[in-house]
Length: 483
Image (cartoon, helix red, strand yellow):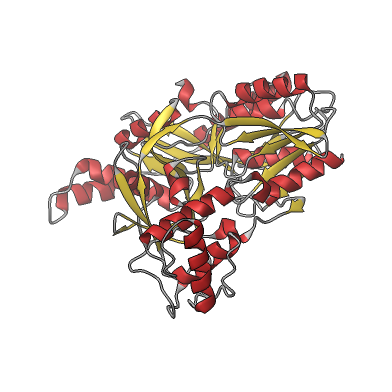
């Protein structure tokens, strides 16, 4: 089998680049794991050979439509529709069909770079939602956030489209633009975001050593789990340990998942053999448990940063470190994706990606549609909850709408107290806008025009990027420094 198909565990969703990825389990580990995997394969073979559904009815319907329908019908279209119809009856957003062209395109994402907006989407309750934008991607820079619901692409509704049909509309070549209309919790009106597609590099590991109360805390951010992630993680961790660290913070906020082998190799460095680091449940309820060979825990504490954009393989890591390692999870409840898909290539090059297993935490918990709760719940400051500004007209005194409310929240977060945050552009808001404009060397009119709006957005982004404003990270550093 092509090694590109090996061990992918994305959030049952797609990269919004020129391609997307999907899930398959294929561990290579201890003899116990290998034997369990072999037994699992034997069970699957037995199940596949036990019985076949009588397809006479399907064949009869196919022949009737092809030969008798009032208008000429494309034979290939009928077959494609039949396959899609069978999958749709499963009511599983993660079990999907890709035609030959789409399947070929999606393979491209597994290369070192790909082109697109740099986000991952999934289907939740029939809605196309953002799992997470990638770090420093066009999507993140445009203001896309986890759990945003995509309503329209370039003015066309995505209602009734499946995940793959939607991503086909969104992905594209570097330098081209796409407009997304999104619904966001807490906003009455949809947002329109114009995003210029770009090349998305597959850099997944960012490392640093941070000082906290005289202690050296290692920090490793994992933005996804790709082919080289585990090796890069090990390299950075070794360098930190040689320098001497008093704790380790692993950041998987906004991490939508990735290669199962990568998270597997990382966990084998951190979790001892006392508990399985993950369990895979078959359709008959039998469970395959996967163990590390590690005998001794690290001699420093570990904490994991999580949020609602942490999904799939990132949740496997978080669940293992919490339940098998006894380490703290800091942040917000994760996305909640607890199933495993495997792509099966058809003879014509098309692919069916089918849900085959559930994955469970070390203690046997199934987190699907629930997520993993943090042990230390921490929300970010309200400035992190602000939205991109799209002005159809300048905003000024006595206006009352959600855009004004968003601006008031921005001003407040930047220290320019408007006096209220209910969306009414009062005299206090005018004063706050003038103060901001003066700071930015903009003519102090008290009116939010495009120039002021752009400066306001840039100031907010700058503030968000300041490490001291990251409440979740600061909590993790303090937690580790106390140990």
